[in-house]
Length: 324
Figure 1 (cartoon, rainbow, N blue to C red):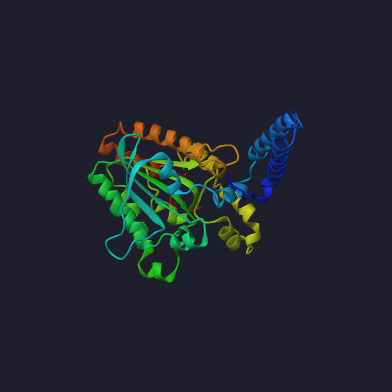
Figure 2 (cartoon, one colour):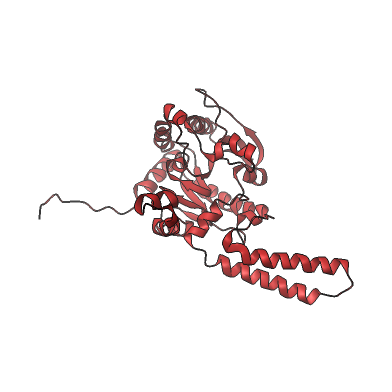
């Protein structure tokens, strides 16, 4: 269980501390405190349920960025078997911010690709803080085309604030690499399921996010810009990030309602970072259900369904061209 608590989780932290102290009393003395333990446990569960039933968009953004949240490789460990990592874009180098390879999902071969963050300073630098560069997106597409030749479904895990905006990344044409992925993912003839597990930032997310299904974990977000970036542009002050998060309609619930995302994947009470195993089980059930549905479609139908899915996002008004 995670030990890091966000500001709005402090009442949970305090009750958990009281419960731990009371359990110590129970184990180190002959005092019967079973009734008090039960009452405090019920209070903890009720407080947790109350807090998580009324989270704001900004609080969900904070959860999406939680340092203890499960990352792509945490899900791979719990959901898939026989994962074999494949490296390199065959043009420049291997981008450690994107990981991919063949695996088995409940007996069937699949290609798993996703962005990966680190948990300590060394691993965060190694993974470039989850910011993929051009070579990462080119590696991802190389693996997708390999999966297509093997007739294996593709499952992508997305958790990134965006593509790496550094000079080196721009010199290697990260924008072109993302654009090429958008184009080529529409032509894939195998099922593609994209899952936003944490942050879904701008082109960094969509570069591996063109799927027949777009799933979002309950406390993930998907947006063209971060709330801080939006606030800096609109209000010239990043302190307005909570307001920007509300206006951007970036939560899973919002995007399912807007028909941008196809499914909200529930998380354990208190967030996925509180129980990796339970979060993974809920994720696996969603993957299996969607793979079964997509497996009924032919290659041509998969391509057409994916194309139509993105063509129907949003509302369009046609201008007749007449002047008033």
